Image 1 (tube, helix red, strand yellow):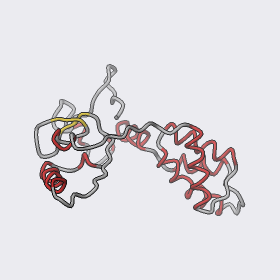
Image 2 (image 1 turned 45 degrees about the vertical axis):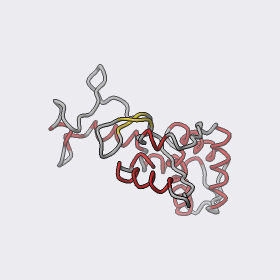
Image 3 (image 1 turned 60 degrees about the vertical axis):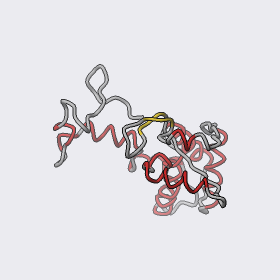
Length: 179
C-alpha cells in the first residue's frame, strides 16, 4: 500500500536506493493518479516521479472466474472446510461481484453455520445465510447512506452543502458509486 506513505517516507526510500547496499524494494498499490501524501502534488499511484522513475512497474489484471474458483477451492482445502460445488460456485460469483477477500471470509462463517446445523458439508444455504448476515463494502455503504439520519453522528447531513467530507452525488441526488 505504497500510496499510504508520505513524502518523508519517499525521501527515505530514495536515499536507501542510492546506497551501495541498496535493498530490493517491492511495493504495491491500487491507486491511479492521486495526491502524494504530505504535499499538494498529484502523481501516478501517489508516488513521487523521481521514485517512480526507479521502479519496474508490473501490470496486473483481475482474476478470471476460473482462477477465482481455484482460489476458493484452495482456501476451502487449507481451512479444512468440506463444501458442495454449488456453494463454491456461489462464493465464486460473490467474489466476482464484491471482492475475493469478502468471499473468502464467508468460507469460515459458512462453515460455522454448517457445524451449528450439524451438517457434514457446507451447502448453498449456509453461504446464503452468511451473505445475508455480513455485508460487503458496497452494501454497507449503501446502508449507511440510506439510514444516515438514524445514526447518532451523521456527518453526511452536516456537510450536505459540500465541505471536506462531502459525498459525491449522482444526477438523482443519491450517493454516487464509490470507487
